[in-house]
Image (cartoon, rainbow, N blue to C red; front, side, top):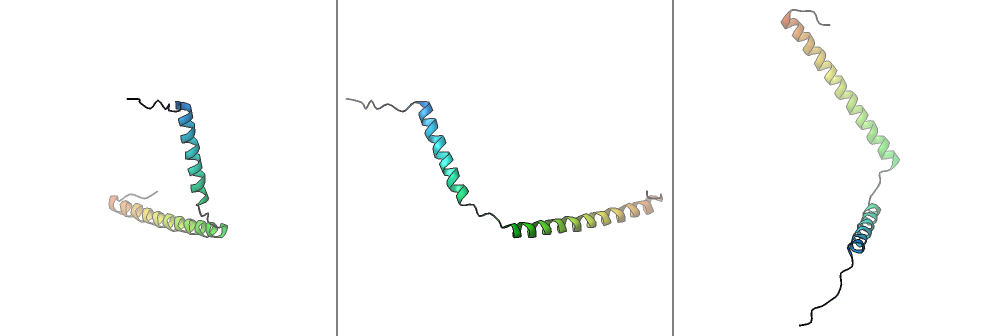
Amino acid sequence: MAESTAKKPNVLVRAWKKITKFLGDVKNEVKKIVWPTPKSVFKNTGIVLAAIIVIGIFIFGLDFVLVRLLALIMDVSAV
């Protein structure tokens, strides 16, 4: 029985092929990205900032009310 004596490429050659294949796949995936327009980024930023302000005001109001309520319950003046 004559076994096939085909040699595998050495470790570095195999690693290099895997790395180049990976980088080629990354390049192809990056090409598929649909980037948002500056207008939509600006709009979405405004929505996020408005939500942060509304939530901040709500938390401030809730904290203010709870501190006052605690002051009434404990009969101490709030700072």
